[in-house]
Image (cartoon, helix red, strand yellow):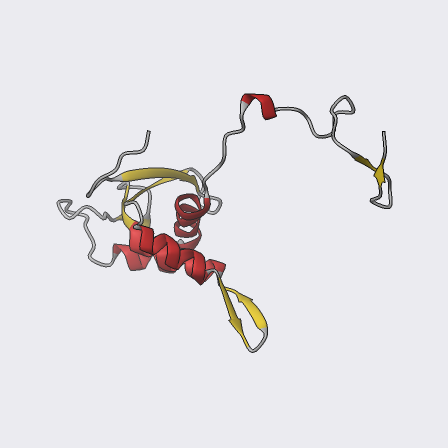
Length: 152
């Protein structure tokens, strides 16, 4: 069930390939306009060439919808010490620059969240569409090695 409304907080847990473990991020739903801008920002055409802008787009729009993270999932190393910091304004470990710290050092995590939110929709197949396309018992046309259709 999708919740619709303002100020709805969502969370996603992402496996951290660098630090190990899981990181939980909090985010808001993107607006329809942000979804459209995201899609149109993935590629840029200039002078007859297409440039992929996937990473930049995921970071930019991920930053827009990122609202926080579970305290303790990120630590900041300063002077040989690991310091817990927080995105929660009511925490004594809150840092105003928490979002910049994450984007500068863990952009891959923000990109994974953005991918999930903006691109991760999956279609559930109908029950009667579960036929294996490689099953020889179905009525699909067959092709030979050259791609020509074999008549039954």
